[in-house]
Length: 300
Image: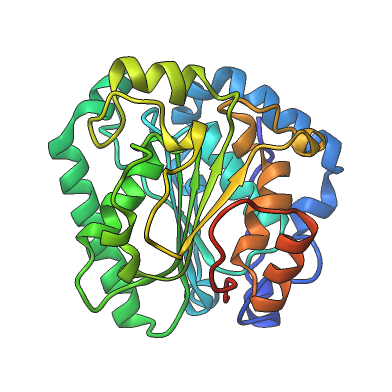
C-alpha cells in the first residue's frame, strides 16, 4: 500500500515552473526500493483502493493551483491504488502543481466492462472535464495544465481534448497504456495541445490492451490492439512522441505489464520529467531515447 500522501506546498513557491531539484519529503523519507516494492504490492489488491478516503486522491492548495494543474484519469477500475501510484510518483519527483485524480467512472466496483463500453458516459465525462479545465484556465490564466490518463483514462484524455472549447488548450498529455484505437484521429485534437502528446506503451502488455481490447473493444469502441500496446499508427500530427517499453525500465519496477507503468518509481523517473521545462525535458529525451516523430520540447 502506498505511503500516505505528504502535502509539500512549499515546493510550488520554490520554483513556479518545472520540477524542484530535490525529491519531496515523501521521497526522502522512504528509500526508492521500498517505495517501489510497496507500490507493486498494492497493485495486488488494487480494488481496495476505493476504501481510501477521497481526499487522498488530490493534492491542492492555493500555491499549487497558482503553479499549474495535473489531472490524472484512472482506468476502467476507477479510483484505486493504481492512480495513487501515479500521484505519489509525481510527488516523489517534486512536481509543484496541483494534482487531482478525476474519477470518470461510476465508482461501482466490478463494473469495468460497463465503464469501457458506456459511450454516453465517456462523452459526458469528457465534457465535464473539459469544463473543469476551461474554468481553471479562466481563474489561473497562462498556467500549465497536463492530463495524464492510464488505460481507459488515456482514451478519456483524448476525448476530453476533442470536447475542449476552441480557444482552450492544455500544455501536454501523457497516455499510459492507453486503451484507444491506434488509428485515432490525433490531428483532430492537436490544436488543443501546446507541446506534446506522449504515448507510453509496451508490446508485452498484451492481456489488457492487446487481447482485452480486441475482445471487448477500446474506449472509442474499436475491437483492436490498442495504442498502449503497439503505439499509434503513422499520424499527420507532429506533436506525438512514442515512449515504447525498454528492458532498462525494469529497475523502475515496470515489468512490461499493465500495472508497472503506474508504479510510483517509474512515474518518478520517466513520467514526471516530461512535465519539466524545455532544458530538463531535452536531457530526459537524450538520455532515454524516445521513438516517434520529432516535436517541440516540452515546456513547463
